[in-house]
Image 1 (spheres, rainbow, N blue to C red):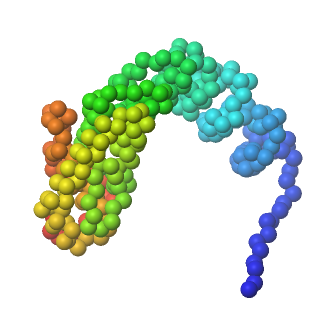
Image 2 (image 1 turned 90 degrees about the vertical axis):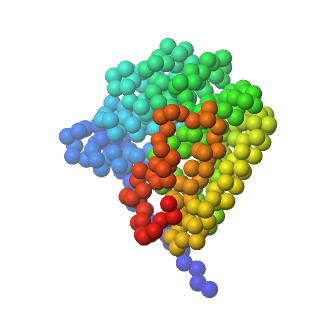
Image 3 (image 1 turned 30 degrees about the vertical axis):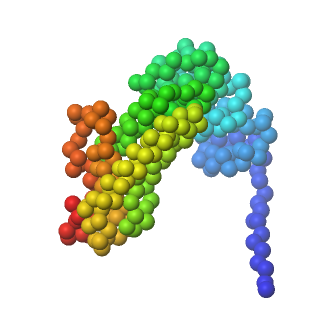
Length: 300
């Protein structure tokens, strides 16, 4: 039996100091080439050279700044605090905010909460502050799933009723939001699915379990089983199983049926007057763009 060995092709590397000079000299004609070489070799350089490179990149264009922000998330040094603070005030870039949230003092986060807490940043700020201080969570600024994750990470807990209400609101959100095919659960042909096939629901139950909300988990799992039984027993599901569709079509169609069963299984208190018509839950917005819908007589 022959053994084949692939040998590494080596080359003579230029001194990194010369490559840094080419990058810094915007008239060198070698900025693009040197940028690529610097990124390729960065992890193997000593800290002195790495700091020089990071300073250069932070004082360069947006793409180079964002690369430097990403690096500083992992290898932080307080020497960078003044320049990061300056760049944040100047540009308010998302990746710059991430560096601040992860590495700046807690007091800075509290004082600059409003400017930093954009989108999901609020969750990470609360997580950081809550590690050392009691944090009052603004429920309007955080998703249900992030709220459960935050409580779990901070060692908090909630009662059974609140835990169930949160889980049912998460199910409601699944049902009424446009369905993206890429986010539909994987399912074998002719098999049903339930809410627990969606990662966001499984994660929510995981956090409840970790917080000791076992009764809430048990009650939700029973509710989910009942909703799944409704899907299995529905004539639409039986007809779909007897219809000749490919795996991609089956996946999107059974997900649509599942969402309808989940929605109809919710108590009225977990529904809203501005919810879309139930028929709208059968197909995602991107349905006709992502799926070759070849059925002449769809099951619904």
